[in-house]
Length: 158
Picture 1: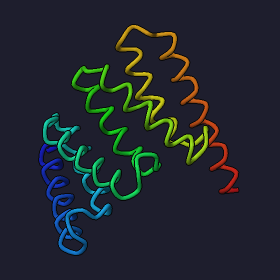
Picture 2 (picture 1 turned 90 degrees about the horizontal axis):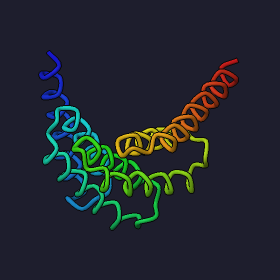
Picture 3 (picture 1 turned 30 degrees about the horizontal axis):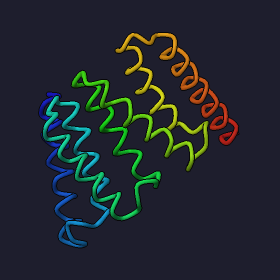
């Protein structure tokens, strides 16, 4: 059943990319969102080569459109970090997570939930490479960010 859902999701994201490409052209940055989404589906299905190609295309589109320091690029860099970490290549994963973290922190602040997501990925890389103390510190920071965002959310609901 799960495999069927990956196929359905991949089909929908591919269709979305085609629609955007027909409407705006192949170099439009709007294509980055479905490229990233499809890459995430492919990563979940362990289709690493295909996912990497899509993430690299997204990175190129975004760097061309918004520049290498824009926070929109961070989602793609996080995806590349996850790809390399899942492949076991922590040497390539770490700089992707670090760059993504820098972009998110600069644009969204140090306590945004997306910062916590990247910290979790970076913590995994550190744990994989025998840096447990640093991994634990990053995980603690990520948990604190998420706990803080939950408190803020509850206050808004009240």
